[in-house]
Image 1 (cartoon, rainbow, N blue to C red):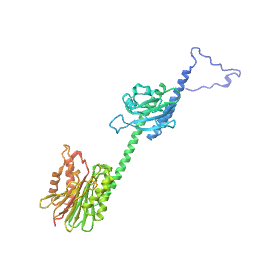
Image 2: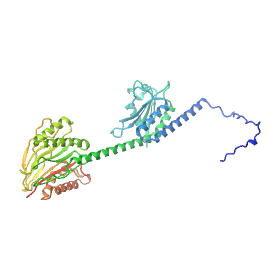
Image 3: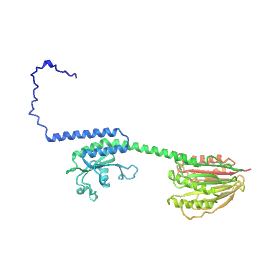
Image 4: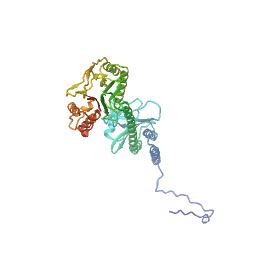
Amino acid sequence: MEAVASRPEEASEDSTVPEEIPNPAQPPATQDDIQRLRRAVLELSTLNDLALEISASHDFRHITSAIVHRSIRAVRAEQGVITLVDRSSDTDMRTLVRTMAGARTGQALHVDESLLGWMQINKRPLLINAPREDPRFEGVRWGATVRSLLCVPLLVKSELTGVLTVFNKRGADGFSDDDQRLLSIVASQSAQVVENARLREDEETLRRMREELRLASEIQLGLLPKCAPVLPGYDIAGVSVPAEEVGGDYFDFIPVDERRLALCLGDVSGKGLSAALLMSNLQATVRAQTLLGIPPGDCLGHSNTLLARTTEPNKFATCFYAVLDSELHEIRYSNAGHEPPFLLARSGRTARLDKGGVVLGFLDAARYEEAITRLDPGDLLAIYSDGVTDAANEDDEPFGEERLRAVLESAGNASAQNALETILNTVRAHAGARGPQDDMTLVLVRRNAS
C-alpha cells in the first residue's frame, strides 16, 4: 500500500493534533498483562538467541553448552546439565552426562538414576520444588545443595534421547509453570539439533577410527615378509589374511645364516588392534632371540616369560617356531600350544609336529621341549593358524583338519605358492557367504624333489 504524506500548506499554523480520547470500554493494562508480555518477549528473545547460536555451529559440545547456558539464564537457575541416553548400553537406564554448566561455582550437581528412570518411562516434564518431600522419589539421596529442579525430555520422533535439567531456582520461590513451559519449548526445539550434532560427532569418530585402522593395517603388513625367502633346495611361501583390518596372526622368515632359516607362525588371542599390538611385541621378541642364535625351546621360553610378565592374564599367544637347516635337511622346532603342523612325506606318511609346551603368556616359568625332524625330497611342511581349520559354513560345519590334509595331499608337485592359493580358495568356498571368521595364516615349505 502507497503511503500519502500531508502537505504543510494544507494545515494552518495554529492547528493542533487532537489528543487520543480514551475508550471507556477498554480497561487499562493490568500488571499481570504486563508481566505476561514481558515473559513472552523474554521467551522469544531466548529462543531466537539460542537458535542463532546453535544453528551457526556443528560442534556437539558447543551446542549442548549453549543450550544449558541459555536455559540457566532464562529460568534463573544455578546449574544445568544435559544427560544423553547411551546407545552403546544394553540398558536404556544408563546415561552419559556430556555437558554441564554452572551459573555459580561450587559442587557439581548430577541427575539421580531414579529420576532419569522416571523420565524414561513418562517422557514428560518434571518440576520438583521440594525434592525431599516428593513421595515419588522416596529413598533418593539428594545432594545437600539441591533445593529444586526442573527436568524436560529431549524427544526425537517420540524417542527419549536425553534430558535437560536445571537445578535451584535463584530467589525465594521455586521453579514455576512458566519456567517449565519455556524449558519444554527449548528442549523441543533443541532435541533434533543435539541429535544431529551427536550423529556428526559419531561419524567423525568412526572416520578417525577407520583411518587409524587403515594406518595400523599398513604398518602390520609392513612387518610381514615382503617376499618368499630363497633357500637352496627349498620352495617356501607364506600368507596372512586378517579377518578385520588388523589381526593377531603373523608369520615370519628370519635368515640365521646362509644355510639356516628360522620359521615362525603365531596366533594371538582375540582380534583387532589389541591383538595386533601384542602380535608385533611377540614378533620383535622372537626376531631378537633368533639373531642371538638362541635355540627354539629357549626362544619360546624367554618369549613366554616376557609375555606373562607384561600382559593381562587373559592375553596369550600360540606359536610354532623352527629353524630349517638346508644342508642337513633338518628342522629343529618347538611348539607353544599351536596347531601341530602337518609334515606330508612323499611316501604318503603324515606326521604332526607337536613337541613343545603350553601357550605363551599363560605360565611364567613354563619350559618348552625341542624336537628334530628330517625333510626328504618331495616332503611338504604345512604350518597354519586355527582360522584355516575353524572356518565354518552356514551350517556351522568347520573346514577341519581332514579337509586341509586332503587338499595338501592333492597338491602333488605344485609349487608352494600355488598350493597355498589352492588351500585359501578351498577354505573360502567352504565358508561361502559367511566369509572368514578369524585370521587365516599359512606357511608351506617343500623340499625340492631333485
